[in-house]
Image (cartoon, rainbow, N blue to C red; front, side, top):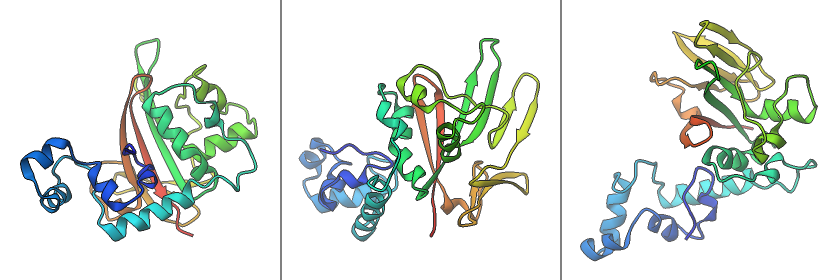
Length: 233
């Protein structure tokens, strides 16, 4: 059975297989009716994730097929060098092609403990970072080495935001894809392509539907948050 994941709904052959992925054998033993089980799944039984209606599932599956179609790529993806099963790296590998194709725009939040014992954190424009790597810009992340496990992705002062928890130093920078917005004490990023606002704080916002947040527990990186914005054309 296909495994569930942010960009893996495309792997389910049918809506029935998708719904079955939320259930266990015991559910059929004790509840009996598939209709009852599906109804319980849709109201939050077995999962906290969004459960799509049938028409929404097929629409999303088509969108994801388009997002993950890398046939038009003219350059080799760095994620082909992935040698780890770390969930953060796997999730970034899934998102590389659609980010390069500018159909998906992902912001990465990291908080890293330094050798000094103090943390640094920041928001990283994934597509912008990949582009800087391909152009071999000074200070760019080495994504081949990151996927190979030879080096770690780290926030720095050139990213969308950077915070040094020891010195209380803040830095904010616009990128090729985002403009930094401080809206009523709520940090947001405005996508330069479709001009949609992408909020990244837990504060309730009218723009919250513009982004999908994914929390990942990573043995390598600790807690990683990915903010996925589907770019409107």
